[in-house]
Amino acid sequence: MAEQFLFNPGDFVVYPTHGVGKVLSIETQEIAGHELQLFVISFVRERMTLRVPTSKVETSGLRKLSSPLIMDSALTTLQGRARVKRTMWSRRAQEYEAKINSGDPISIAEVVRDLHRDTSQPEQSFSERQIYESAIDRLSRELAAVENIDKDKATEKLEELLTEKAAA
Image (cartoon, rainbow, N blue to C red; front, top):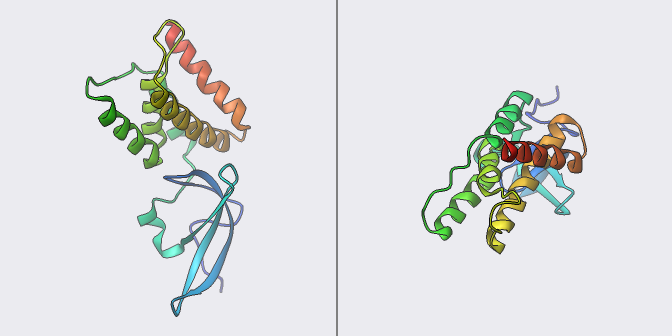
């Protein structure tokens, strides 16, 4: 009888520090004299393949794509009021990076919301822009996978929501 796994080849998954990937296969490898079952996950954008032991799924943070309900919550968060703390940028930058690397779409949406600038606002610093780009890229890739649309369409949708919020 075949072993039952949480993910199957062809499933899209989210790895917290890399975003959306696709399970290519489940393979067995011998490592240091132990047989390990591994999920082989491809991240096309990074041109990277990751192997995650099936026994380490929970501790690694690997998860299924967000449900449409969770993605809707993230989009609602995106339209909320920006919360910019008055702490030093280096501390805020660390918090933003931690939220992005958490893999949680609602946390990532908070970063996008807080760092988004409309045309009437001052320019972002280089590091703010980098973190913003990283967050919107991560969120749009998951939105694209959840809604089965291409990444550019997902990015457009996010930017439209942000623009509507700014106009309101």
